[in-house]
Image (cartoon, rainbow, N blue to C red; front, top):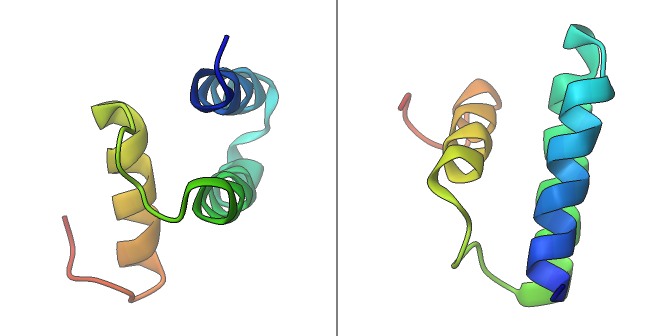
Length: 65
């Protein structure tokens, strides 16, 4: 399994285990790690891209999606 697939799988597993209130922290952590490892959000599956976009909108980093 390549690094991208491994990180995506780890996020999906963590989101299943996480309490509802900890979702934002999971998404934030994943986004920071992904950006550090790859430098962009290219090649993300659409469902994870949507999670990150919604989180960015919550933080006021971009318009609502």
